[in-house]
Amino acid sequence: MRAEIETLVQDIEQSVGLLRRHLDWDASRAKLDELNHIAEDPTLWDDPERAQKVMRERTSLEDAMSGVVRIEADLKDNLELIELGEMEDDQGVVADAEAALRALKDEAARRQLESLISGEADGFDTFLEVHPGAGGTESQDWAEMLLRMYTRWAERRGFKIDVIDHQNGEQAGIKSATLQIKGHNAYGWLKTEAGVHRLVRISPFDSNARRQTSFASIDVYPVIDDSIKIDINEADVRVDTMRSGGAGGQHVNKTESAVRLVHNPTGIMVVSQGDRSQHKNRATAWDMLRAKLYEAELKRREAEAAADQAAKTDIGWGHQIRSYVLQPYQLVKDLRTGHTSTSPQDVLDGDLDGFMEATLAQRAYGGAPEGVEDVD
Image 1 (cartoon, rainbow, N blue to C red):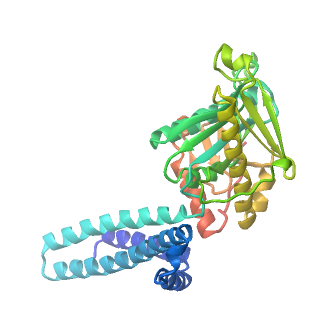
Image 2: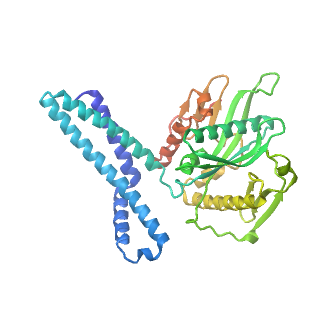
Image 3: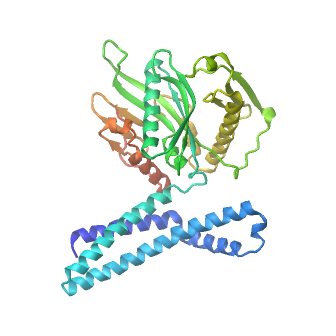
């Protein structure tokens, strides 16, 4: 068997092994048996909301497991065809089976990636907030660069982007911004980006052209639908109205259309000023608050919640998840996974999939990369 075919087989087997590990095969099989038993209960549809949840979970799990079984069977069948073709010196059979293996490798890789985006809220739309760290204009400019980066990433995927909040900096950049990004698995992808991002470059605002380090933080939380019930005691929420600080003309500046909600028990705050209507901004703000409280609950369920929250306590040294170096050399490096790019401009133009996939894989399969050091 040629080395190329052996490599294909190894890649497929590795993807299948990771899929089985991620699914926790025996536990998933027991869970599917349980869901099948529940689905056969004629009283299930007395509660349509529960029934739909059960059926969605069963379909998803059944598809994932049957996909693994079929890939394993197709791999075996095509290896037998290659062996038969080589025995009979039939290169046509060998070539067809080899082409089938390549397609199988692509499918296994696709299913492996899809398995990483399988959390409770991963399929939802998402809110994304950008906040500059200390440093005034430098950090505010960096925050605007990050805002542009995520906008470009979303546009590449054909996602819809709504600006919920946008506060301009005094000289350049932004004081804060919030986007609502709508698309399949938007939260599942973008949750990997939450944390502090560090930029190293020659400052465009320094007449002496000195190298400057800037920080900005990204916060990501899902847009929850009506199937997720989050109870909030309105007495626990402070409601402030204010004049919008973003673009919008005289009407926005003259009326108190912006709405800020502060959840007193947790200190969670949200601001909505994307619409000229205070009523619409108020509704959006309540949706954002429910989403943030839901995301906080999700984090409490995850083993890595403590590390995630610690990364948000300080937008500065020691807490960053990724460094972007523009001078004296070109490098973007994720400090969690070790994934790198030597083309920062491509990354800042929205080429983020490699970083997201690496983080999803680390979360799913565990293990910290060896030899990952900070970049200066």
